Length: 239
Image: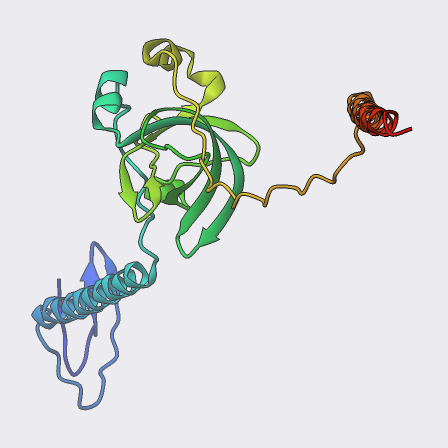
């Protein structure tokens, strides 16, 4: 390559071709190394931007997770065998649901007892269970009969959960066979005060009194007749 200043060829010749150049005023050429350093600055800036975007995304994800509601926990328990349920139950009885009332997070179930094998000695009992299956509450239906395995007592109410062996009567044939015959509860109420004895009105005498009266009258007449006869005999000698 040939470079000339002042006169002659001005430019760079390569293989017979002259590449002309124009001088720039007050332009100082710098080594090409500054370009690599510039690329390093650009790459560093890009990394800073990328790191900042990643941090923003992480903060956003944390906010989303914090604002999301906690997942509901489902009831988890193993089904009890008959032997386990019969051994651990405080009461075992067959009853029909008469009414259901929700009180707070619990369901109060009023039931009419048909027969009992343990406790539940009254015709009507109260059963308490959680109102949600997620909280292990047992779902009762009005008018349906159940074989109830109560796991505990809450005052005068029996506690029942989804984890107990409580089930509908149409699904309890095996349990009925193992339990045998139950006892029908009967509520004994206080007997009312005895009513005063009824006053019997007097009645007229019958034929027996008539006969007695007639007999008395005849006797009186006989006595009077005898007295008259004696009186007449006493008078006869004087005559």
